[in-house]
Length: 543
Ligand code: GLC
Ligand code: CA
Image (tube, rainbow, N blue to C red):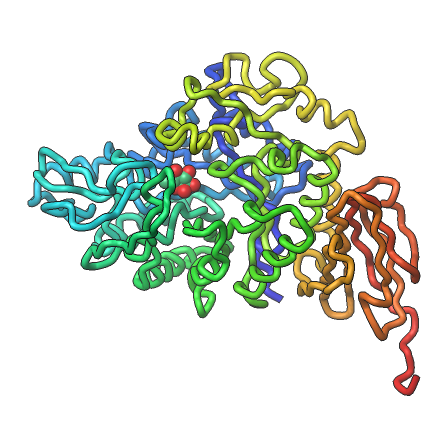
């Protein structure tokens, strides 16, 4: 069995600016994060993915890197990174960096040199053109081409004009980036989350994208992105990057695959490589967009498993720093939040938890005046901005909620005391305590981390039922995604077998105690349970 650590892992995604402030400037930092490692250990996560921490003018909060070798001063120092790796590893927690390879900041020395003249050494580090060659748009508004006075040419930027796209067709660029990747791997980083990695290669002749008819607030969404994304050659580049990673033991790549539809699992899976020689994991965001019903979640999960296949890992994610928080989608309903968590934590592959998700943290309210996100600033009110899911973590009861002594850079969510870790620690049945026990259940059971997953077609449309199998061991998971009482018969679910279901775990504490059953399985509203399937006695073939 391949025992790479990310199989079955639980990875916690931290927006560093909003996790814990240590020096009273209202901005989360690495020292702050360091002081919260015990919390993360107790939660039971295997790894932390840190949002970008490299030097940046913050036009897009770290997604515009001006120096890949320097730490953003307001977030900390290289010594803090050393301390973080050491202290995390002591607790068997791995550290993953967010790496932006598609573009840099316009303040990166490469761009400064590139824009200085057509004859500069870095002239071809970016994508330049004498005139606007096509209809490509920037994802944050305006055309994807901006004129540069000093060079007298246009340069390409898929996002802000302060985020010029690197020219990956130039081998010198790839080599310079790989050198930097090696630097961080030597330092002990366990892997990378690769930002918009399907954008790195553009059409060689810069053809225009086909238009889509319709009306959308963002012109970017009015074309099919077939020439500025997903070019075949990007796979070869990712394979090269993978071979760099493979020079080191146990390092992992997870890629963000920017999709046009609210989920394109086949596209995300294609970046795992036909020979499993590209990314180890990739993100598909279907679940974040799907309706919270048994049929939609089943459809999404089956499609994702089919796309990834049995030899590759799907990854599971409810929200992130670009999407609204999941809790707001289900209006903070504690039962639904537990059910969603149980679904994720009983899937094969890797589970990502966005900080605060374990608390049921809702979106924060950010009015246009307080907004930092360039996307929200440009498209408010059509797009309310991404700041709403980037609010401060809430640790304790009282002013500032333990995040900072100063005014935090984004407002703390309403009802923060209620959601706080301190408050939820007091309540045995809180969402936080549920996450702790459900993660422990997963980590303690190889059937849940590694077992094959098969969905069972139930007659009852409110139930989402699947079975995880590893060798002779089986776990049955039944989720009642409705507000009514539901039952199902074990004999229908596992026909032709004399089987008993031993309840191992449930979202409802009263149902968590072990129970043996041959008869119907009963589920309260929004209840989900995990059963061990135990063979009673084989039916004889003739009967
Ligand atoms: C990715 C990031 C997003 C960022 C964009 C540009 O989508 O997740 O936050 O703004 O890339 O780097
Ligand atoms: Ca700080």
